[in-house]
Length: 294
Ligand SMILES: Nc1ncnc2c1ncn2[C@@H]1O[C@H](COP(=O)(O)OP(=O)(O)OP(=O)(O)O)[C@@H](O)[C@H]1O
Ligand SMILES: [Mg+2]
Image (cartoon, rainbow, N blue to C red; front, side, top):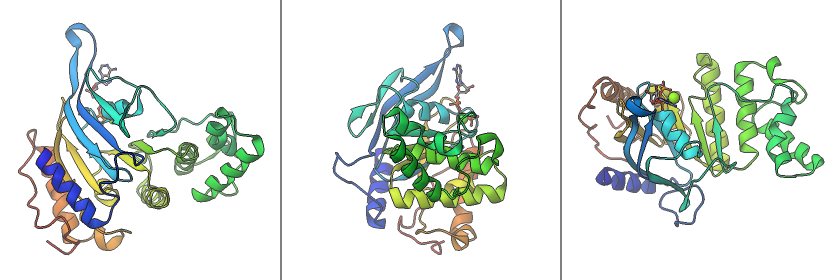
């Protein structure tokens, strides 16, 4: 595991991604020997088993794994919604002890307040921080523009499409300027075209802000389109089975999605997910290999 990790670090550095910044740089996640046991008595079981990994500030990581393998559990530990049974989770060197706006969480289904307008939902976090109304409006308007919702300020969540609801949800989280964005299958309920648009929007927002992103998905194509690095998880109890660098430059588009290198990695991920033990690791010619490398 550690050997793979070092390779990952070097590859990120060489790619010019925000690699190996000083320890104090914002958004550095350390998951240190984390196990999570759930349930009571005879029903108690290990949902996560001894997961150790580091995620660099500004890195985009996808967690890919079969249903029930503990992806949401790991995200819950990062969000501070559940305490590991063993080990610890650190953000910028400090243990995570509970939920905080510095770690924004987006789920598959929105958690917007139905009685608040779009702009008031987006500005809610600022209101909780005591920011004055005029400033809240100004920042909410800027966020609305960034997520492509200008003109929808006064609408209510139930008058929006699923894609628009998720745009509001993302805006509501980003307005708090999180160091980390945690996403649990955020586009899983959307149709294919809307999903692609949302993926592109997310990459645009990330490239502007460079927060660390931990994105859970079942969808191999989605992971290969979005991630710097894919962490493939085993079936329960969840462990990190493999780390896979995505060797594509950004911005990514149709060239990457239709390349032989994309197909090879997709096939590899499929094999990994199908086999309970995971397949052999992908032969890595060079972590810097471009889309045409194999
Ligand atoms: N509060 C709980 N009590 C008992 N078991 C739970 C609890 N929450 C989750 N589980 C179980 O823990 C395991 C891991 O759940 P988790 O939701 O993390 O998986 P997942 O990888 O996110 O799955 P999915 O892809 O279906 O969302 C699953 O078997 C689930 O049924
Ligand atoms: Mg889940």
